[in-house]
Amino acid sequence: MNTKKRLRHIFWVALLTVIFGVGIYFFSQQSFVYHATVCDYSHTSAPDKIECWYGLLDTSLATGGAANMLHDYAYLYSHYPNILVPENCHADAHWMGDQMYSALLHSGESLETVDFPETANVCTFGVPHGFFMHLFADHPNAPFVTATCSSFETRFSNIFPTINVQCYHAAGHGFVLAHAHDTSKDAHQLAADTLGQCDTLPNTLTDIERQTCYRGVFTALLEWAAQKQHGLSFDKLHPFALCTTLTNSWKRMCYAGVADRFFREASLTVPSLIEHIAQVEDPSLRVQAFRPAMRVLILRAMPHNSYLSLIPACATVSKELFVACITIFPSALFTGGFPEQEYPKALALCASNQIHALDAEKLCYLSVAKQLALFYPPEKLQAFTDPHVQQAIAQLTEAGKLTTTELDLPNIH
Image 1 (tube, rainbow, N blue to C red):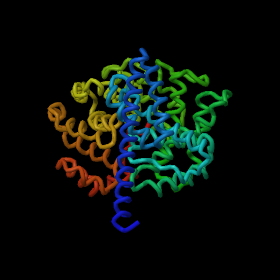
Image 2 (image 1 turned 45 degrees about the vertical axis):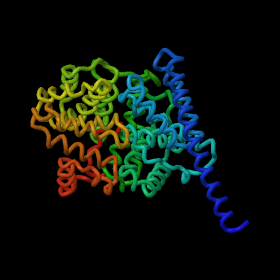
Image 3 (image 1 turned 30 degrees about the vertical axis):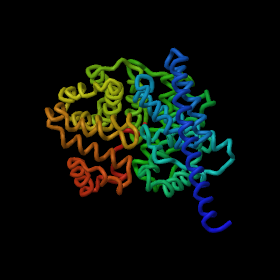
Image 4 (image 1 turned 120 degrees about the vertical axis):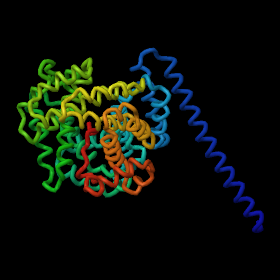
């Protein structure tokens, strides 16, 4: 075969390969959309629809990997907003991380083969939370956790600046899950034992890494309480009762965890929220409880885009809660958003008449800047050209408050 014929042959082979690949991709996407529609029309209840969609996502993972599964979940999330609601987005992402871990176990491959795509920060890093939770439930010991978190930080911190924090947070989940079959302990003993495991992690951990491990413990325990599993349940009159019995180092995350989970079960309004929070005597712990509880209200309002109507309520709270009230709004919008899509609503929020009426624009943009720094590496922050955001980033950077050890992490849950 002469050179011209060889080149022509190579060209046609390459072209046909591209056409075939595009065709396969297009067919698979059309197939997913079709089957997603079938799930919608063939089931009447939301739980049944979701279970059907989960089955499709399982197939997406098996045939195209984690990036494919996340891409297909994005389609579902955007096309069925009244069923896949922001309030449950983090739990959905947890489930996807769990499926990734199951796939790893079945493949027999090593941890080094795990590849979190850039979209794995969806719904506030629920995917790595779910993955690490089950991994650490199978290996609930400090040396393994430390080595794993260090390894993933080395591999992924250029994409996810807080991957180490997410990893230690999920360790708290895993420590609790490892006790799933132990029915001999009450809530206090389970909390003390699993929080103690967080304290066995090395002294080199930052305060925020250890605190998020504590928060991971409470999130898992309180999920059991909400489901009335393992003999645990909420004291509806005194939801923070458990927290008052714990040592000071554990209390902060207990109040945050209880507020986040208990108020998801309650018919919550701003006045009833303030009434419950008033039970907390310590002002700093009151703030810790107020933020996640207020976030529940905002997430519930997101499907109807009615969250702006909640902003005037910030004027009714005490001075100590006002800053928390304003700054939790951007945080909540990031919780329910997708990568590259979570910040537009937050920017619109900061420019709203409601925020302007409270003279709270600066607080709002500072919160947006902090959230961006949680989700994106430093080099990507410059791509956000909004002048208010850039001014906030510059201010936080100058004050040394734009590092993963300084950032407040209200979205970790």
